[in-house]
Length: 293
View 1 (cartoon, rainbow, N blue to C red):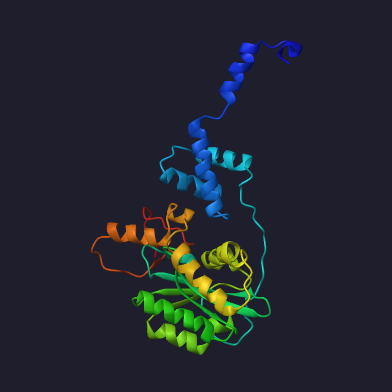
View 2 (tube, rainbow, N blue to C red):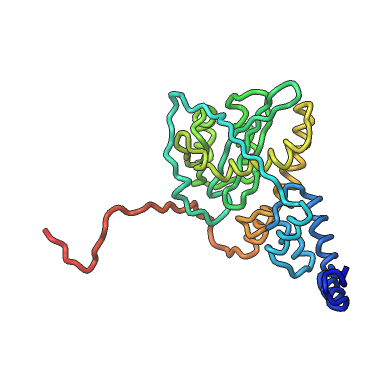
């Protein structure tokens, strides 16, 4: 072959040896493949953090190249289903979450409801997240969409976190969140209500992102037959995997539990304060000019 192509045999072997994978490269590929198989929905950025924590000095681009060559890149499926009914006569509240400057836990909670399709029925899941750490602090599963569903998730969050007065609770304008029972329970802990505007799901983006992750990585990954089976696996995924293991890019590639633990270590003895609100000014102020009567 070398004679036919007029290539020196020595040059061919030198080129082949330079392209052959080294032992270190094979070890890195093995670590990447193990991490990708352990979490089939994990992207290359999180895989890079995982292998870096194992001691490999590797960049994100190289990890992505190896995953692409080994056909390990995650495939996303886009899907959007509107489930909120905001056509009601209850009082609605302005969106305070978009102006909130969150610097601590229990300053801003976000809540939402989604549906889960089982073999022979639909069930509904309500969740409450801490917006600062992305931690799921409360959730409930029921066969109906009554107010008792999100109220059960809220009660679980209150029992777990014991929030101080001034907490902002953000949700959509669904009847469950605007109902008297739900509002009164929030008023009893001196929380402040906040709601997204109609047809703007991105205004509750943190909770929407959690529900997308939950469905993609757990619910759609295995066929569930009964609500009891689903509830058991949700407990395991939310409490043991999502809150304690799964890495979040918004948290510097740390899990919510790890992020809260590190924040607690760095936090001084300063008193807890509610989230600050920042509003844009629409009036120009010129301090150097004298005031005119």
